[in-house]
Image (cartoon, rainbow, N blue to C red):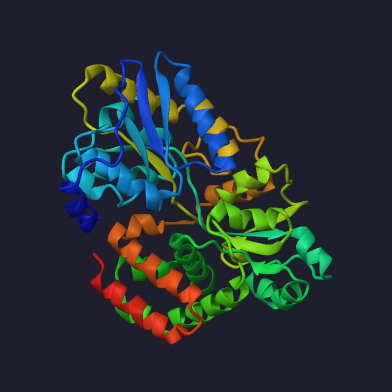
Length: 410
């Protein structure tokens, strides 16, 4: 992020914003897939139900594409009304630069401290005791999505855990099916690796390596076993010639692939396709090994603007995002879990219910975005996209590079 800010500080804005009237609020985000578009439509509908209007600023290509554009707008003096980031450390430098609003007054007026669960969601929006963002969901990475028909077609039982999935991979490959679907966006491979770390080495290992920067643990046998599993995943993913995460999800939806390691945002794609959880597809939290939910997710931040009417509209949007009605409608469409612990999600499907049960039991861990800086995560993305695409990189060599990244992390 430091490099990004330095480079963009001397550049002109990439986008030109449309002037916003008192009732119009430009909201930038990267939700453009079928399931994501349906979900963001619920947010827009709720905000349009107020005296203000949602002006959609969707950017295709995911967060890696969208965040630099958003940062460019901000440091170029052309702020949008609100923008999506993952809650955690991504906005630290923007806050330090004095570009984002302190939303503590709204949080207190709306009682967020009493209803947001777990508390770590608000903690991830808080810097020096001030709340800077409105969290809208819990989006956990810790899922394996499986096509029931793919396994049935090769005479294999639908796997109940990671080891069974690996064991079934040769049968899928022999039948001309893709065992593991992985797209070429770099964050997909690093995300899969982190899920393997939690499932096979344990959540404490992830927290100590990323949160405490435990170099000895990063170099040790626990991580060596994770890199060996990542090599298995690499082999299973060979031939998965798609780019975007939702294209990989579609391979599972259409029974052309056995499974995908992906966050619960994938569930929105199954929903749009009319697939039924437990019948058409199976979801395994924690790869069927360690059933945990990480508290990753999305939040909206609000730039400081010299316009009292836009500021007032920002306040209304923040309150609307966390209203009970919006939380239910949005998260049912998105496949994510609500940030409020007091909403009724009886309409949730089987996979969402699994997530809600894990959350209610308190089986959570911090998200990588809450533990690492954006710079560290970008280095990890680079490492793992290379590892998954180059079978000449041994697990041992990849682990050595991993250790160097952890050493240099903040």
